[in-house]
Length: 123
Image 1 (tube, one colour):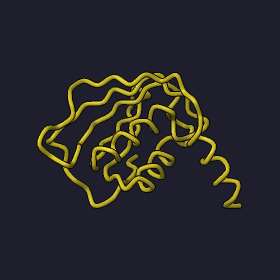
Image 2 (spheres, rainbow, N blue to C red):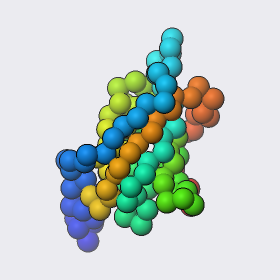
Image 3 (tube, rainbow, N blue to C red):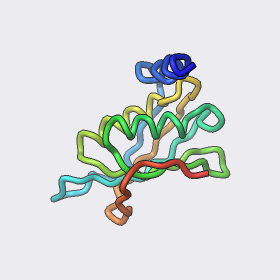
Image 4 (cartoon, rainbow, N blue to C red):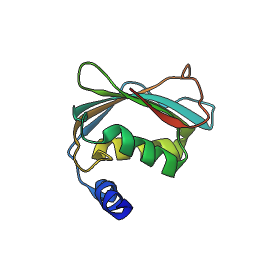
């Protein structure tokens, strides 16, 4: 049974999306750790997006949180090294779940984001 789930979620890793990335500000300066907030819109709820986002974060070594918002978007906070965050943002743009269809990822670098010990899903 696990191979069915692996096949399903591995499909999203190579999917092509025309989702747009919008950076609200510049990366944090004078630090090796980047902290971001991301608001993802499109078909991102009810399609395994939070689960697959956590899976992508765990693979990349990113910590933070992902949760659904009442307006149908998904909210992410993530902390990691610059290259990890770049790769993570790209995975969000592609829609880590193959059933997702991402329209836009709005990324805000925010030094006030709390560092977490892992990456988790919230309800």
